[in-house]
Amino acid sequence: MKKILFVCLGNICRSPTAEGVMNKLLEEKNLSNRIECDSAGTSSVHSGELPDSRSIKHALKRGVSMNSRSRHFDKSVDFDKFDLILVMDKNNFRSIKNQDLNNIYSSKIRLMTDFCSSTKVDEVPDPYFSGDEGFETVLDILEDATEGLLKYLLNED
Image (cartoon, rainbow, N blue to C red):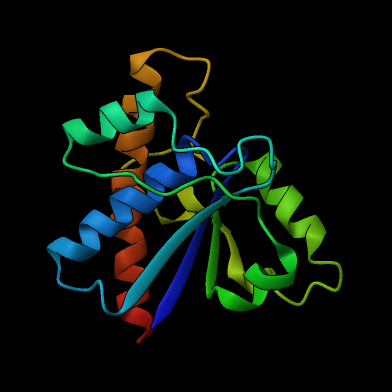
């Protein structure tokens, strides 16, 4: 089984949305038994919290459920446990890379937008301080990226 970790800053908007979107896609394709998803944040400020209510609201409009609780990225466990660590933006990418002190896990750490095929962006923007449009944009990007990610994972097997 492949194990994928989605990472953003607080693990209440982008990364749990990516986890939810990917899990929905896996269920639709009957692949939930082959790929496992989780999410985490580089900051522990929201640890234990549910996803942002606005993220939940917008995801539900697209049939995506989000019920994970925020957790902090744990380098002592997560680097070894996950096959891919997909980060939402460049700042958090640097944060995760900096925790890989001996550059052992660099091939596992990627930007989520590396898997976009129709959306031309280099980061998933943080919608926390934006309105409804920001949350919809995040979903648009993540729906595209998860499709590309699934194709990548299936081609690896």
